[in-house]
Image 1 (cartoon, rainbow over the protein chains, first blue to last red):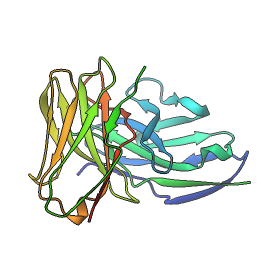
Image 2: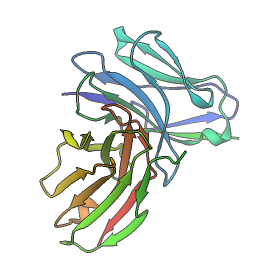
Image 3: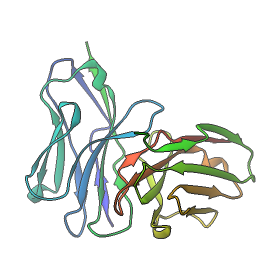
Image 4: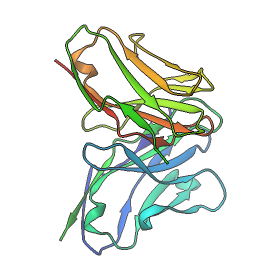
Length: 114
Length: 111
């Protein structure tokens, strides 16, 4: 079955420190990959997406993600976090050419320490 | 430009009732998808519509149905509401067959 795993439920990072959120996927073929952010009570905002090509993807708000086929991973990174980055982060995937919608991980709750 | 708009933003229903949720996609977007997000979980795929045709359906009971109109707006209907249907319902739209711009959602509470 297709699945997306975010191993870390909570992550605490000091303001100004670097961040890496992990995401692993299990699909028969490489899917399309996405990272979304959700603030409390809000909808989802797309940070970045990977379809093909360069495995390092740049997104909004200073985020980037690296696709590693050998590890079935798509980890999200930011060199220096800001207090406003505190939110829930979701990794998602969808099959190429399919109509199965997005499969989301359970999310990682990011806490920023002053 | 207006983003994906959903209405209502909140509503409370009683068990056994029916509910209709509405979504207006970004202008020019022909694909609309619906997701259910239970508190503390990631969203789960319910339906995808493209050019007014159902393209995909998630693992939800037949109490859930949807349709897309000629102007590409969409409705999600849920019959015989259960307490477990309480959730944030999210709509997403995109140009092609994969929704990736989400609205702010409708918070449904079933009592």
